[in-house]
Length: 509
Image (cartoon, rainbow, N blue to C red; front, side, top):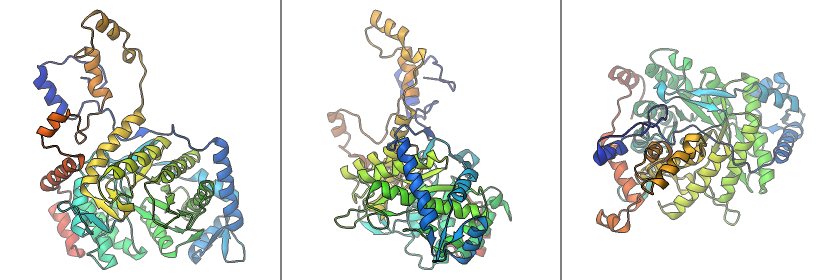
């Protein structure tokens, strides 16, 4: 085993003690979140420059349509131009100034500060996203409308998973018809069930003031949430192709007012709302996400914004969404590369699948797309846990399976550390001249927990043992684990006084 510095220490106690240590979390985690990405580069330097140049030209020549009056005034004051044809254009110097003054790194706070993460640079984190309207029922394996109870249960479940670094509500409570009640109860579910960094969406700007009052109660008093915001907003202020959405822009203004960090999401669809060619798609999508950045710059320069350039792909034969495709994998990787090349905190939507069942299609699509985005250096990889059915569904057992998959991905990102100790010259000599193998050697034991990840869902038993233990597939194991977590994990992250104060002021369902 290793100590906290990674140095070898002598084991004692024999096989039983080793099994106990193996069952516990290793002292040196071989694959923690925040590994370094950026080795996969689908675009060359020339490609990056040409795409950026085209995006700048789109913004300077074509500009943005349907600009709300308040935003128009702020954009013009910042240096944008009205072309007299109902569109606002952005000269290249304005865009470049917005990039230069943008927040390059910032904290996503958890209510528990030990769970906070820093966004930006070259660190990779997996988290959630999505607005699934269906849940794959844990008992009968059939999709049904998602409920508020599902949202609470998903939040409790992910609270135990180390590789979900922040939690955005993954499903919509379809049993809450009123939009204000929905926004309130969504935020409450996050407050009650996790202390990780969280994120949600606000249907209308006027919902934010009262919900911030609820967040203040959890934070310890009036104005406390804005001092250290632990919930960010997911907003889509740009509607493809190349226009703003007024309601979402209003939400942006209110979020900035309350110091709520934002993921400004562009979600164009290749061949539908953006060009079918990948290069053209990337140019338009980059221009649109830059339009969000310029908007934020015009309101408050340097305000924390995740540059969430999400390429979505449709099957051009049918028009169906194709989130698990190879094209989606390479486009999201390229999007992360572009954002990082500009020095902006990147967010991409990957690790998606079009599979409805937890099957081979599910595993293949998730694995390909999540690894591509991570290797390319996506800072925040959304939709990465629990999502199925082209983002229409969410699954409890999928959360368990995806969490283990992310450990493998982080291990791949960590790579190989080459040092004198790791090269093992002395260990090779000792094994060759001694027992003729490396089993049980100090060099092997030192590397065992430090360098290797041991899955607990994936099965590595030989076939006879696997059969004797019930011949369970991975989905069955994951389902059983999800059931145990939901039965046992009932966190109380709100005090009784906080909960009572919230319930006295809001309609908590």
